[in-house]
Length: 318
Image (tube, rainbow, N blue to C red; front, top):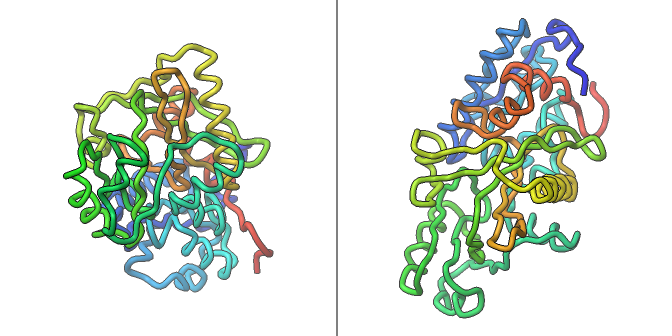
């Protein structure tokens, strides 16, 4: 992918961050970093918080391109992408459909299953009826999480039958659809991907070693105790297989621009797909910048590469 364009050629750029989702705090951290990098590169970049301003201000104020640094609902789920399509302003990352699919963990898994890609067994729960029967079908331990949230928000690892109700109650604080998923014992991996379709390429695999194996919100974004091994210490053939599976998962959902695929590697060295993120974090603890550095791509260059791919996915610009 080319980054030979001059900063001035991007025109007036809005960095969208903040928003109205449960991940607002992290989005502000991501967007602040992206904004600083763009300005350091000489891009005419400005902050824009769609949680506080109407989207139509983008057109009214003459923005020519948008870097989406929003996370979660109303930003990573296709809603903002749809608004930008209507406004005719090119934007970074995946389009409306891919964003919506990736935000829905259940639908993502169904897409992967139709493509023959491995993902843990699961059930969808919308009420607490017969909740205690699920471990009999999926086994223990289990992961219980909201179907439409990210950043490990509302997630519980369930070790016993008596934990199911509390886990369900926590998840329903964030979503009326709850995903109960078979827990894969093994190593936690993530793969950053840049590009689209046949040009999509995986960056080095990262292994995540969280304190007590608990990669929760605090350990993900604010703790210095979580370890990240990049490149992950894997046999070459395993690393290649994990990268290839991640690219296949990304393409199956029709992602583009950039993204991150999360996986578990079981004790038999088999990778299992967990989820795909279409607007990954760009904080000091974030994983895509870490993988990019391992590939020799600085934070600033990464931001410029992503911005260079901004486009309208449907229709033409007004």
